[in-house]
Length: 159
Picture (tube, rainbow, N blue to C red):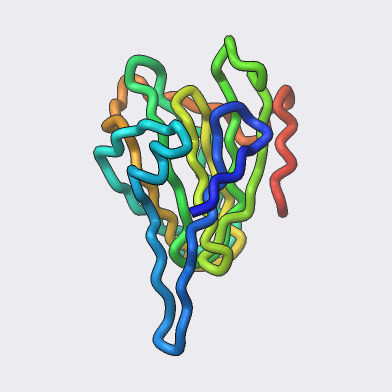
């Protein structure tokens, strides 16, 4: 498992080791031991699965306010997305900065989204399956969002 530091503080792009053969492939999608080696100590407590039927479905930008903020480990198991994270932590050196990543079932990349970030994605293919782990439960009263085309962020979403 290779951890790649993103431009945003505490957010990581993760490339699992993929073992392919004539039957298909095997990969380890999460290892607490490997995360701890990187100094990442997160206790994931819930897995979620989102399915989008069509290309162009935009979900986000979502986050939960403290004390119910969530870290997420996200990946695509079918299809392809453009995934965007925004650092909302006021004391962070990357406050109000965003970064986008292409995640797909072909590249196997995963993204660790820390607490205090907004997260969203747009599907780049039909029939896209997106799965993610959370370290805090959904709390409707703490749910918040940022509109996808916020002029202050100026996110360059693919069309």
